[in-house]
Image (cartoon, rainbow, N blue to C red; front, side):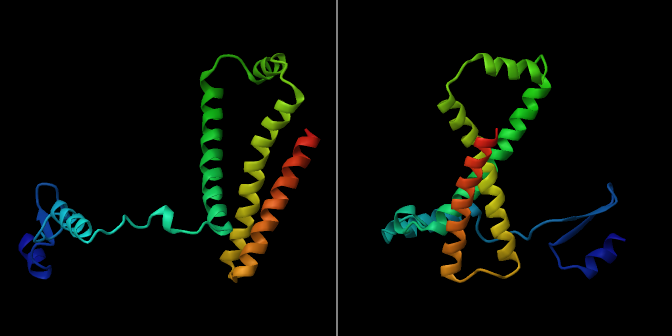
Length: 170
């Protein structure tokens, strides 16, 4: 079996290990190591006095760029927040009404409470609305630059209005 496999495969790409009864693939050894390649790359860039690229200082910040960064940030923040809340719900003693009464007993002012509500409502509404915008892009619509900016401003305005409405409702 091993001889048959070796004859139908390129030498150095496939080995048969009869002690395990399965095939193992491995890479053909290269002339240089990754470390040597990396050192050559950096030596060349240092010699030519090239900047590290891409570097944030060479980009002109735009609305789509900021919205993309914010969309990713809200996604990470929401995932982390939900995970932390779920973990705390599992490990902390007491139940939900106990912690709700604890928050009410802090007697925070209405301004701070509204700010906290906005801090929760805005990422949810922004991430949801921008996700809907991305679904339109997935269907192939809205790729022209004016449409990208227009839909971006619509998402920002609707996110703020939705967050304010959520605060007023709560």
